[in-house]
Length: 139
Image 1 (cartoon, one colour):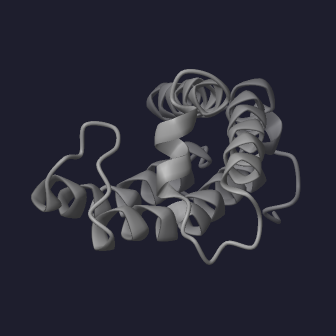
Image 2: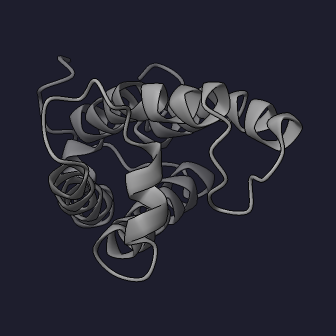
């Protein structure tokens, strides 16, 4: 079975909960991009990004909402959606590095130690996304 093929196999309850929880986290974060946390997200956009920081934050917020909704609403496509979510987490990682390297205070990360610690959680998100897309041991 291809990663692009819809699955009809039932997902174990724990994986389904992980998928739905990650979807909710993404949707809530995406809403934050568009509302109260917009300035903090803008602070994470590296200067080398060739678009305005506001555009990047709004666009990435929209993508997060869409990915969160897809994780929740498209369980038959969970494999491909979870891999896209994992790729998204990899794509936004330079923003976390930028925050650390340039000593930017945002989201309560007001010390280099806190910002460095956060860098180690990005691989956890990638693994969470991949795990959330599996349905059984052979997936």
